[in-house]
Length: 93
Image (cartoon, rainbow, N blue to C red; front, side, top):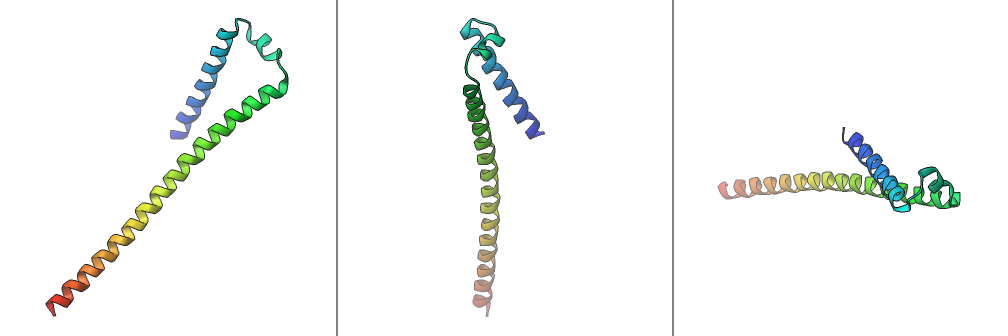
C-alpha cells in the first residue's frame, strides 16, 4: 500500500511539474516538448529518476538500520539481565 502511495505521489508531482512548465511557457505542450533537443529531456528524466531512487533507497536503508539497532539493543538488554541475575545469585550465595 505504501509503495502505491509513493508511486501515485511521484506521478502527481510529475503532472504538476508538466502543468507548471506549460503555464510558464505560454505555448502548447507538443510545441514545448518538441522545441528543444531530445538529450535535454533525457537528462531531466534521468535526474528525476535518480532523485526518486536516492530517496527510495535512503528510506529503505534507514529502515534496515533501525531494525539492526533494535536487534542489537535487544541483545544488550539480554546481557544486562544475565549480568543482573549472576550478580543476584552471587549476593544470595
